[in-house]
Figure (cartoon, one colour):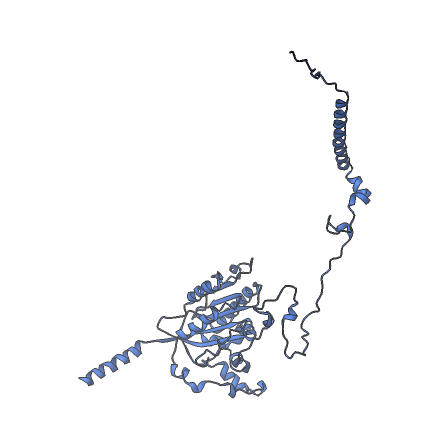
Length: 383
């Protein structure tokens, strides 16, 4: 009975392996600024396949930190790993990857059956955590990305038409070059170079050599790469370029600086002044401690005191105490405002004349007026 049950389980597992299909799709994630700890959090080399959960965690942990001003999600249906073998199709993408402080390449993200990366989940993550304004480009037209009218963070989701299986190799190269130019035009509209890009596809390709992809012996470690790039043979470069476990190996593998985390674009803001309260009136340079203490920080401009110097005629009344009112020493001012001046003087004279006449009238009235009543006389009392 046990032997029969064992055979049944073996047949069932064999059938499940026949039906069970493993697919993969490539993805590139890079950030202009450093995402601290992201590279160290990878549980294995980028040259090994990633599961769907691992890729999702890496992308989500990058986006939810809100370290960028611009986010771009590029979805190219039909994109395959071998498309990245043609370096000439991605001039702008490769240049941006070289300048990025954080770069993670995922040549093979494994999926079961009809699964793929849920890009809408990342849009939701950015909306919740970073309060981004979402702009979608659906017709391969960069004009759909709109124009900047404020400083709010943006997410550009490029839902491109994609590549077809019946395209020739040259047609695929030309189409990818068009998409690379479209990405360039979209990012050039943004006012900030601080961007994060996810370059991937929602379509998958069936994996036929899973054991080879999972083989750790195929991993190229940093100690195997010469310190001098000139010592790398052309045959080795060609082998890496056409391998199925790397994307742009000259950037992601042969560049030994990619094995270390450091900020490649430190010009965005002075790190020493971040989250620092500077008292009013204090020069920012005085709030920064330079090590060692006797070292002079020559990156600051000389401290300047702003002094406004202007002609006396430009001062407003009361702004300069030494200034004399215009109507006392400016004949032209009096001439230009003669009617208004005469009217004012006339009104003042009329008021003074009225008060004087009233006083004179009251004085004359009290002087010439006679009393109308006679004082009473005393009468004698009768006995």
